Length: 210
Length: 186
Image (tube, rainbow over all chains, first blue to last red; front, side):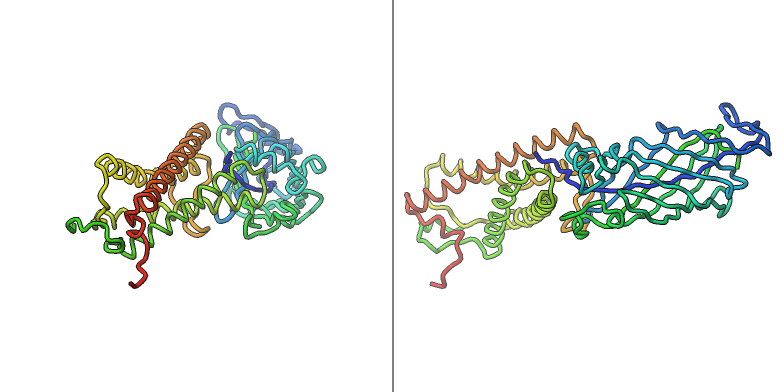
């Protein structure tokens, strides 16, 4: 009974990351350092470490902050941190992998009013430009498509590296109704807020040193 | 406490504040119980979401008013009871004590359940309340059972309380109910 979780939710997704890769001799990276390449080479693709990454969304329902996360997503990333403008990111989220930690809520998310994941299995973010905004900081611009709705999105990303692993973190906000997430009675934002905060912490190997 | 001015109906009553708390809480508790019973089996919907939140807001309100009421009770002597066998007086005292216990235990268990389930309570959508238990699914299930069990316990106590009060008033005709009824200005 009670599942308290009622909740609703939704939302979102995000795309986020950025990342990159590039050649460089990787001696700099300690042990498991993956990428080593020669400077002039074309950056090779980075590898997303899914089980070390986290992609979550937060939303308020009747004032109560609730959170969910996606368990499956993939990234195709090419990034040379020293030449981010040559980078490219394609990020795909399996919407059916969304969970809020409660069975009733998770089942609700799949429904047509929310993600409609049968009809629209993936949320997709395709970058159009990546630029540096400071040491270890980038801005990734692109288009986010969910449920047949596309919106331009600009995502700030911080990139840190250690032991050959690059960690991209950041967050951004979405309006769920712009993507038709929560239709019908659920479009009442006094119950389920329109603002969705998406947070990501993605780990990659194969990105050249900053 | 006044001597034993027997039962002249209407002579000794609770204070207006005590009566107000009694009746407001009676209504709130019965309503929250009914809503709790109804909402728990609802499928996911806007209605379910709203009822859960309203139920929680009501529960926290009941908790707060019960604290106020306990404070009143600890600082005031209730009006004299009509004469009754010792065992009845003892039973009345026990039921009253347990009722007070439940006024706190039921909402606190519900609050803990909500926190453990990962849904902190935001009172009336405005005031975030602290979580005093961690988010833990297994714990949430146990707290849910506890909350339900205690709520049923409270319901049983309420029935005993109401039944006894009605029996006194209508069968013993000792005017007991008048202690908790606003005076009609005589």
